[in-house]
Image (cartoon, rainbow, N blue to C red; front, side, top):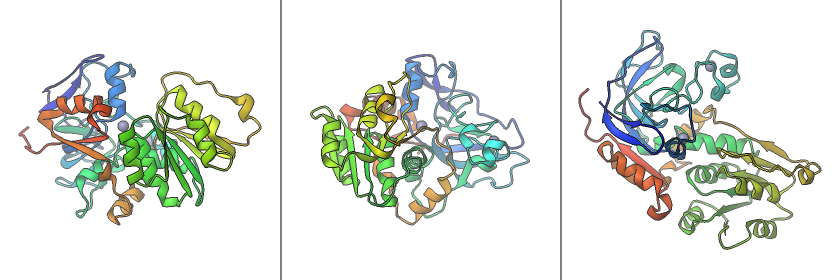
Length: 350
Ligand SMILES: [Zn+2]
Ligand SMILES: [Zn+2]
């Protein structure tokens, strides 16, 4: 089969590798029909994630069809259409019992990280009973790829940890895929204001279409001043969706007393926590890696047409064009790219 293989910092190649086989009775082999590229994959490509070794097949998002099942798998059978969760979970350890699947003792984020991932024609999914979801017949599979990672991440770590309430002023710093997923899912709670902050005018324009009530271009304006002017004393919820010190800094300056800072961004550097200002503000600061425990709920909202994850898809490629897809996604600003779909339109033989 063909797969996208990491070959050390700055190097990836689409090449022939052995088809994965079952290793544990709880495994399933999925024939991947659709996958995508995540900002995290670009971090890996830059060499920011040293746990990823040369030779690793990348990718932790996708949908597909069950090809082969281990003898202990109960919930899936051959030919089932499945959504692959970016988080693998055994369902039995202490963390899984608390639905903190991100910290599963035999899972967590392993796909395309510690084991081979989904940017391939076939992928092995460990603990399949707890790590895959059935795809309803009436749902667009392109849309569902967005539910592997970005929608649960935006919803759980941004909206739920940020404790968004009706009427709140919500500020989202970063209008990338995760920020947009946060923007769409925060609307479940009818906030009074949703202020989107970014430096890319085309992303800000899309944010308005997707429900932002205000936009701030941080390249032209003082974002902190603008948010403070548009809210009564600051944001109730400030959501960080980038992962650099500057954006975290905006969040800690715009949060109002009693408010929440929900950090979603993947940080590679330490930030200055302004505790000398924040100590008396009664704020809550949360962080997190997605648990994907809300995936079944999000699936229901998509099916009920209360959520349209496909609105984030800007480009489509075939598996054979995956290198081009990386190029486009890697130059997202110039290409006006948000999420790319890579599909196995010409299902090849094993
Ligand atoms: Zn991801
Ligand atoms: Zn577990």
